[in-house]
Structure formats: C-alpha cells, structure tokens
Image (cartoon, rainbow over all chains, first blue to last red; front, side, top):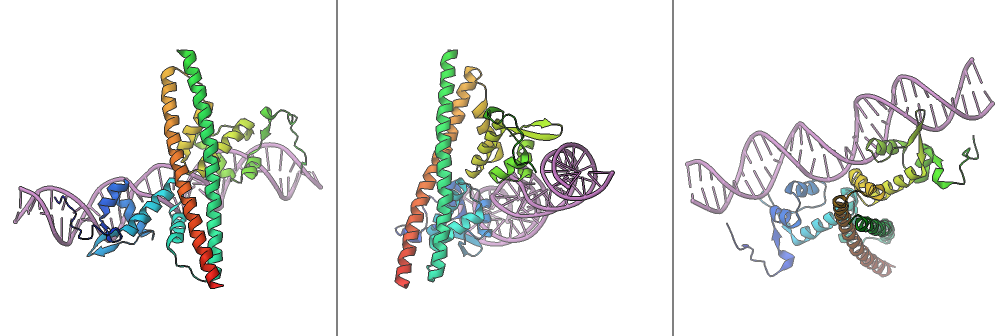
Length: 138
Length: 138
DNA sequence: GCTTTAATTGACGTTTACGTAAACGGAAAC
DNA sequence: GTTTCCGTTTACGTAAACGTCAATTAAAGC
C-alpha cells in the first residue's frame, strides 16, 4: 500500500489528481453514482488508459452536484446550474437569457429559504410543546 | 354551474370543506397526485358516498406536503414531518425520541439554508460577471 | 330522459437515480 | 504465479412519484 501520494504535483492545487475511490470516500458517495453523473454529462474526467482521473475542477463540480442534490434539484437541473458556473460568455442575447435563468434559479432558492424559515420556526414551537409536556409528566 | 359555494359552514373555517378539484386548482397539483398522497397515508379525507371531502385540516396537511416537496423531501420523510405536527404527546421516552427527530430535521434544514446562502452568493457573482461582459460588448 | 361533467378505481407505463451482479483487466502483494 | 484489490463495462433490477388510459358511477343541467 502506498502511504504517500505519488503525485509530483502536490504543491499545485490546480493540477491535483484524484481517483474515483478517493472522491467516493471524501464525499461519501458511491463510485456507481459518480460514474452515473458522468453518464449524465455532469462530469468528464480524463483517462489514463481506461481509468478515470479527476482534476480539482472535476472535484469542484462533484461538490456542486452534491450540493444541488441536498437542495432537492434533479440531475438535469443541476447540470443547468453547473453550466452557469463555467460557461464562456457569448453574445449579448445569450447573456440576457442567461441572466434570466439566474433570476429564475434565485427565485426558487429564495422560496426554499422562506420555506425553511417557516419550518424551523414551527419545529421550535413543536419542541417547546414537547418540553412542556415532559415537565408535566415528570 | 354554481357560482356560490353551497356550504352553509362558510363562517367557520374549522368546518370548511373542499373537493379534490378545488384543492387541485388552488395548489396547482393534479388530482392524481392528491390521491397518491392518500395512498401513501399522508391524507385521509372523509367520504360522501365514494367522493372525497377535504377538511381545512386536510388542506393544511396538503400545504405541508407541498412545502416538503419544494424542499426536496421524499413523501415518507414528509410523512414523518407531518406526524410531528399533530401527534398526541405520549410518554416521556416517546417525547425524548421525538425531540431527537426534531433536532435531526433541524440539522438538515440548516444545512440546506447554508447551501442556499452559498449558492445565492455565487449567483450574484456570476451575474455580475455577466453584466460586465455585456457592457464590454455594447 | 338524455347528455355533459366531475369523480372514482384499477391497471399499466414512465422517468429518475441509482443498486447490484457478472465478467473482465491490470497492477500490487505475497 | 496466483491471489487480492481496484477499476471498468454491460446489463438488468428497483423504488419513488406520479402520468395516462379505460371502465364506472353519480350528480347537474337542460
């Protein structure tokens, strides 16, 4: 077993490399899932022969994917979001359309944020009721 | 066609009644979905003959279901959440367990809230880049 | 009485997001 | 040299959350 990463690029985070199992462990997601995200076009790691090699940019994309999942977005929605992050700015019409997409996404997120606030408050009140019941039963 | 609701209980919101299509329209969800939520045990409207009649309590539950969906929870998770809202306080052990469940849920929600904040900030920065590109292209 | 119109039940179909098993390849460990 | 450990590919399986008929029933309007 190798204890040190035979990397040679350790100092330069932009050129760090990862295996699928490393990412799998780091983010607690199965390799099957990671490969599936690739099938869906959300990742495209380099290859060394047949083996996948993930760059730190791939790693960031995976992070974004998982964050999207936590927020309940579908993989295709997540694809749209990620595309925003690293798409080249095209013509003005494109940019206009793009800004609209951002605004739609922002709206969804704000709705979610509001939903969360309400739910958290309700949980507070439920817990209070709970604790009250407990003291009565002591 | 009836223009006024033949309700007779209009004044008392606790006794208001709704048809499946009314709820369907109000919340923009298909009747199929509403029946499905019933199959999953999330709703149990009364019947007039074979027809479903929803109380305002059922309506609130439906609201909670849809809010849960917007937050990306599965129907069974949503079931757990809703159960919190109207479960009778039992013995102390139950209540203790219950409070733990609340804490778990709160943790998830706070994670989501953080994810949203980060994403919103990133969207801001992406939009700024966009607008910058646009002025350069003017 | 007849026809719309709304609602129900049952069944099968569909999409998404993976899980799981099988069969193979290559490098490492012993 | 063979076992072990990753990793790959292919393929089939599956759970969740409905959609989409099709066949019935029931009430409402004329």
